[in-house]
Amino acid sequence: FANLMDVSFADVISKCMSLGIMVSINQRLEADVIELVASEFNYEVEFIDVDTHNEIDEEEEEENEEDLVPRAPIVTIMGHVDHGKTSLLDYIRHANVIAGEAGGITQHIGAYEVQVKNGRTITFLDTPGHEAFTAMRARGAKVTDIAVIVIAADDAVMPQTKEAISHAQAADVPMVFALNKMDKEGANPEKIKEQLAAMNILVEDWGGKYQSQEISAKKGVNVDELLDKVLLESDLLELKANPKRPASGSVIEASLDKGRGYVATILVQNGTLNQGDLLVSGQHYGRIKAMFNERNQRISSAPPSTPVLVLGLNGAPQAGETFKVFEDESEAKDTANRRAQILREQGIRAKKHITLDEIGRRLALGNFKQLNLLIRADVDGSVEALSDSLQKLSTEEIAVSIVHQGVGQITETDVMLATASDAVIIGFNVRPSLQASKIAEHEGVEIKTYSIIYDAIDEVKSAMEGMLEPKI
Ligand code: GDP
Image 1 (tube, rainbow, N blue to C red):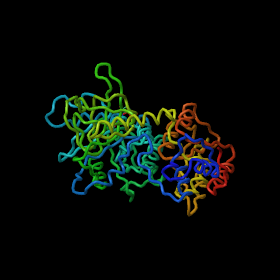
Image 2 (cartoon, rainbow, N blue to C red):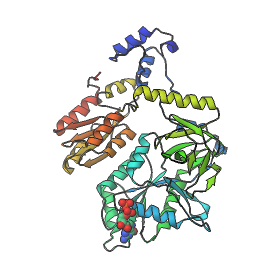
Image 3 (cartoon, helix red, strand yellow):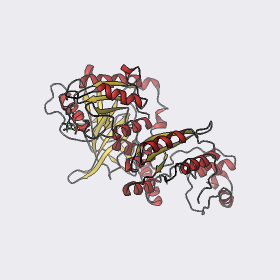
Image 4 (cartoon, rainbow, N blue to C red):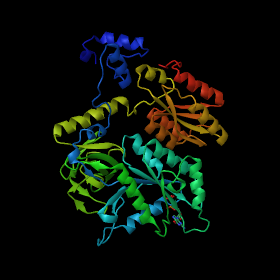
């Protein structure tokens, strides 16, 4: 770093110290520290490959318009437990086997493709629920284009329904609502729509923008209509990809199989994946020996939005890790090895997330515009009071955004959402579960708990004014 700027090590170290950051000569600096120090020396920093994930987003921008073709939407089904997510996935899997094909979908590989009307296809992620969705997002993957939120019409909008909605919103993923169990006595879809409206979610027949469809997942009633609405939503998104380029995408799941070695289900999001391609995901790489679809048929190439099971990697990448095809073998190896080295050095420590203490420093960098908070409290009244007061702290410089709020203990899922959204968790009269604390520590997510509402508000306010002293 010092060499690049043509200054001495000592200058960099003393600059760091003057900023309150104690460093030694062979220490890796965090990205924002590098930016800050560089700006002190009048340099601007451009990061090329700063972390251990592949960077697929940036490359998408380089795409040539004429190479782009429409691609199928990738859909995740979310909702409260027992509201019918699995039943819906199962129904769609069985009902929409490609015409004339015997056997249908024979294996669960984590995602499947179905053919719907007019030869169009939809790709479903086969792990329902917002937990999996957000865990993948926290690893860097953006794999869902549309979320179907299932709500049992004989029940109500439940805590996990609200979570699912918050998680989809935090990811900026459009939602289509499936009001399920319409075959049941006591199904009351109007009540559900009213409850959604109370959360500021207006469905179309209430004059809002969200599509909803009454269905019975068990009997398969109106599921086609639901899929039509998913396609409509997909049309609005104008999803496109370039099948001509080398493939990139995300890992859905991976494991070690006794007979076959490392097996990974991956979702091709851009480009076309071919047998024999050299693939790198995180610290793992390998040439694709064979590829299979969810019907256990061997395939030789996979265009965008296709889930495939691949053999040939030298390890099992994490779910949500992105992947990229490389042309050059030594470059692929170097990339994977360099990531492995960084991971070893960091002790698999994840990227550090925002903390209240840190806000001052990020403000000084001038690129901090939004403070994301996740609120948990013991009773509904406190949740509302905290949420209102904290949102009111928004200024012209920083907007306070509540990514999720809820009653009860701070959960693992909350921590994953905070990880994916770079949020601080604020707890009032509640504590994190043991597992949540562990993950928070591992992911570098801050959990602040309070027993006086005023203290919480005051502390966030001071942080936003850059008044909290950074802890070193
Ligand atoms: P999940 O926890 O959201 O995945 O819910 P499941 O799909 O496992 O469904 C929970 C229960 O509701 C099961 O007993 C299903 O048979 C039942 N169920 C799901 N959809 C329907 C439906 O449309 N009508 C009726 N009557 N029962 C349903």
